[in-house]
Length: 269
Image 1: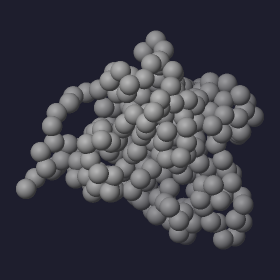
Image 2: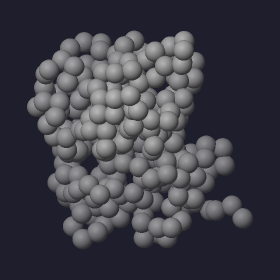
Image 3: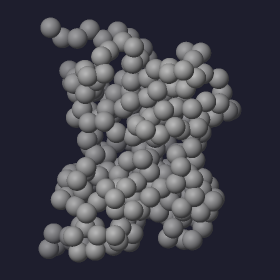
Image 4: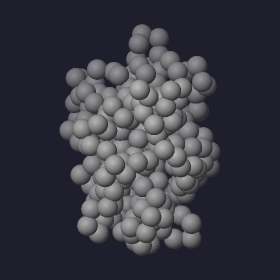
């Protein structure tokens, strides 16, 4: 399955032991010796709501906005849920609506609180908005750090080239102030309420799309501009529409998802 270019092998939770999911993610998501993907989705039905777990290609578990839409599409096509339902994902109950071919998920408010993110800036621990987030004696990069279910560092300005992303992405992801690492989102304002982004996801590398990253980019834009409403966020793999009345209000994300193919995984050996 894929959503704005974020691609995932998807399995049912009933088909594999929970303890095996991290290792299975590493094997399935390998683009040479597995299926290939930006993460593994494990989906099931728990009472009246869907259950979703997502593991990055390095085996770490994370919250995933695009994965929510992929899980919603699959659960709907399986007949497990109707057009309006809840997805339980990494401790959150996400209200979900499928309408006119688009999937809308309600993520709740974003947070800039250092404890929630988590981030630990030694010089000014509570300041996570519009501050120096990286410097190496040559470059000094300003941005913000927040969580929309997953940790994101937002860097406004012109979008960087491939070499800059490949260089700075892993350095910022693994910087010492991020105990659980961070994804890095470069954001360029191309028109009022329209953003373009490039993405370095923690545990993955550069990706074509990020739902929680798009939400973080939109929230940070609304905080900088003092506005509210619907922001189109153009990922390399396609657009999502992020809506919030104010930057600290609940966030909803609307976009597409698509099942690309299905098959049977025969584990090597």
